[in-house]
Length: 583
Image 1 (cartoon, rainbow, N blue to C red):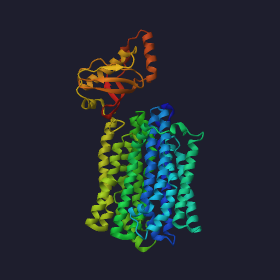
Image 2 (cartoon, one colour; image 1 turned 90 degrees about the horizontal axis):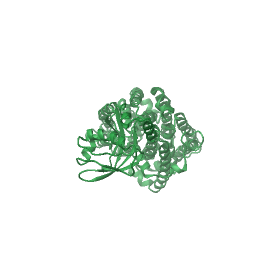
Image 3 (cartoon, one colour; image 1 turned 90 degrees about the vertical axis):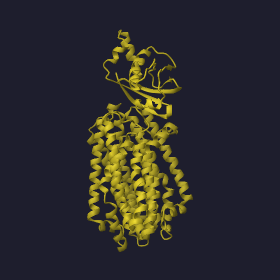
Image 4 (cartoon, helix red, strand yellow; image 1 turned 60 degrees about the vertical axis):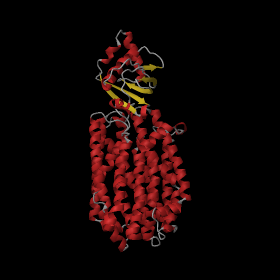
């Protein structure tokens, strides 16, 4: 029940700290996977700058692995939380099981394809003849362990959604801790070079995956991973994929962006520019991972309360998350202003690399402070199920603005233009997101924000259907409360459509089938659920009780200021939820 879940009752600020702080710490620690590899490799005499370049070339491919974990992990966890908020426990378990199956399948597929197409893939992502051997040695091992990375990253989202943010943090700590310990052992002790760094990474991810699965298969889980829920269902798969698509496309576009950037760096600055930007990417990852942690922490809070229609709690959670994210990136931005040389020198002390890396660090991060708002505001729409809006806003920075700038700016201003492409995209995407977010908050305040971008209010039915002068609903069976439902639906529909409406017969079940007959043609409609302030299953009992006392049906309508009902409308594939009409 909703009242038993702290997501819907506990103080929002306390929940945000409880869920986000462990996620932030976990994401920062998780970011150390790649950063520590670069520090150890950059300071290894036999690897140095070329070793950093090899990881930099492989980095966009690793982002692709991460993106699939986000696609099915974040998408599944969002659907999981929304269903829990609505009290649909079975649907929530379907989301958990289907997401796990999808993560397993994609992890195995990536492992096989990565081994087959490794060399052409690395060349496509910008590897020169000098860097190619380093990148090949590293990524071949990473691909062998791709299933560990995909499953552990994806399922960690469900730990938070299942009310275990601390366990999610411990999972990331455990993985990063093992990686930190194994890196110097394999790289320096066993002289395994690039393969040693990769082996340390995949072993740590394997341990994280085992830890997560032990939770969901054990007694501690509030919602266990069970075989019957792992059977793939097209409807659940589609919803998971739709909800996870914004985050997936953001990471995929980030991978594409990094590949394009590497090729441009090679053209305008050579191998040293690629290695220098690899250091900048490591710093950027360290600065932006806390934002991902805040986003992961606030997501179940927003999703649950949105599903429970507690919109004030949704707005409070989002506001606090944006403030926290902005504060974090502002501190990071100040550090890059004050200590650029010292930051770059942590990775490598070659004078040419330090000189280029310091300049790149300062230039690339000019508008970093606005990124906190842009990321959290864009992902807000994903948390409430508006995946299209989230996808558009998420892609606005990397795809719509930054990639074209990377092509155009260096042609006009050389390497400096290339480095200032990021501030341009950061500022403009934040402005676009701000406008979109303002309208979203305004609609949420009015209670008019729908749970999907393709979900119109009842007023939009008028534009999608032919003008209806007479409506008849034919039910599969009659019911003694037919007149009640007729009175219930007749008036609001007539008011909204502004057209004469005939007799409407509605069956108060969770999945009543009926036909809507208009002047032009007939369309089949399926109604799902009917909220009258009491559960649908209890409605007949309440009506029977009133009838036994001699109370007419119309009497129970008088204390209700609003009518809410939900349709699934096959016409043009549009879905209508929480349509309102005044009684």
